[in-house]
Length: 249
Image (cartoon, rainbow, N blue to C red; front, side, top):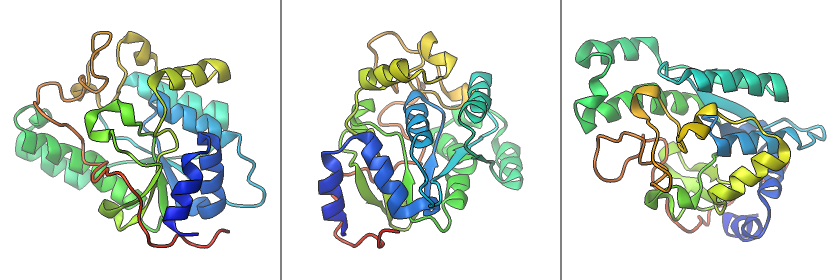
């Protein structure tokens, strides 16, 4: 099956079907990157309900930048206890962090966009690159209505920033209301900060609450103007590739 066929098949299927397909297709060669936002908790709950049927489970990974909210750490522990799925916590390289802080101080990201991107690079992008070494696909909780920059996210697309591996967004066409409905109906634990006006949660120094009805990502790097991403999600374009997927396991 090539990517055009896969995208056509997945476009009309549920998020659960998308994850089951990913499990069969890639097994442990796929990694689900969770930041423990509400979308990611929905995906984790779905993954916990997929029978392995003798295959290897999709890896669950999470980036600990060293600057997360305590509420996020609390949810990490709760998720481990509730679902019993191994969660690989990936840390930044300590030497890179030391060099970064020595150059600009612990809050260098407030000084310039360049410094902020450097911090995101050391604490998030580089660790993710390491975690995805050898992977054939990664699963993310992106939704099209999260921001204008994500409005054309595809269910499945090649990720040029990670060597062309497949990037799979099971919730691409979900709304925030869809996410919250699933959370309520399936008793999914979510970050306590969501109830305090944080629709999008990242590092503590770089995230703040937003008023009701505001852009969900306006609380991220609020001191910057224009489009804002940390560098984990780039080249989010519509359409699919024509190169083939690996043979189903």
